[in-house]
Amino acid sequence: MCYIYGVYHYVVGNFCCLLNKTFFLINYSVLFICYWLFTSNLTTNTIIMKKCIITLLFSGTVFMTYSQSTVIPDSNFEQALIDLNIDSDGLNSSILNSDALQVTTTLNVSYKNISDLTGIEAFENIETLNCRGNNLSSLNLTSNLVIKNVEAQYNQINQLNISGLQLIELLHVQENQLSNLDVSNLSNLFWLDCNGNNLTNLDLTNNSELLHLYCSSNLFTGVFDISNQDLLQNFTIASNQITAFNFVHNSPIRNIDCRWNNITNLDLSTLWNLKRLYASNNNLSTLNVANGANVQIIDFQVTENPNLFCINVDDPTYSSASINWFEDPQSNYSNSCAWLSIDEKAPRLFDIYPNPAIEFIKISLNDSQVDFGELISLNGKLIKRFKLENSNFQLNLTDVESGIYFIRIANVQSKLVKY
Image: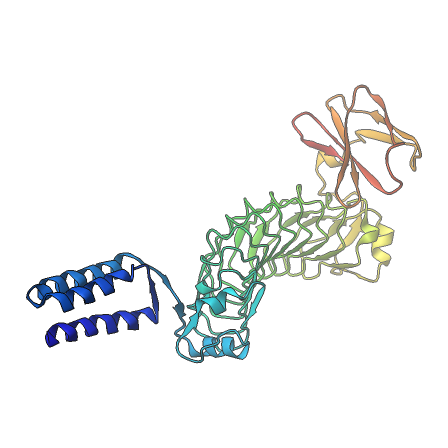
């Protein structure tokens, strides 16, 4: 009988200890039933005790559903949480899940000498994580499903897992050691800064909402594709080995920094919002910035391009006199550079009058192959699209607000003819 009681107390004691860390869904009446059987029949107690022990252990294994804490092996990480009054049970290599779940907006553990962010998975409700300026070599945020802003710059991260995080809008991973960056599932991403990494490729096919893209000081070569970024405003890709861009679909761009690359030809004639261009230290031989809005450009730097002799602009006199336009001594401004294609030097394809207009404009076509036109605002917004029904088309402007607009003329295959 004493032996049986000893076993009974051993089992119950350990069971209670387990309850300190783990929650079990067990019917407590089992314990009372077992105890009643012990005191009623000594002969059968041993058999019944075994059955009870098996029942308890089996129940504990199957119905274990929730751990009350999450391991945090990095003491600097945990100390940062304690300093923020988040971790309530002291420095013990773990955090209560209830403490972590209370953080619903921003978790800022920047510049805390953290090497391991294991335990971040417990913070399921954070929208912003700031872990910049630490010693992280890897970062896994796949459990932080509502996160929108990640600031992980100035670490040594070479592995970043952000798969499934479709709500991310801002991603700062500059100055790390990334050789691969997968942003294919980030359809809401509008700000990406990956300056100062080891990237050789960046697929932006699914990131059509990008407004700000910073990719300087990586290992990109050849043609850099931004054809799906038709909302892009700021584009920085200096200090790579890029040879070409195609800006046909990027009319909202305001600022371009492509210094220190191997670009030979640059056509910015469709970028009517352009305000700053930094294209020094390339191999440019052709540069077309005749976008109809050169007066908006406030900073223009294209020095250290020894093969650039002619820069095509709106008004050569204006560009030459502008104090914020910097070019090499051999470079001259013109509106008819010799390198312009035959199509670009051909007679005008259409005429528009009156200009300025009040109620209407007339479009006189000199090319029968054009089919439609578009009225576009200065910031790149499509105002109206119209079919050119005859060679002397009149466009009603009474429903259009006063301002500066562009006319785009194209054929049915959407091939650009002229602005």
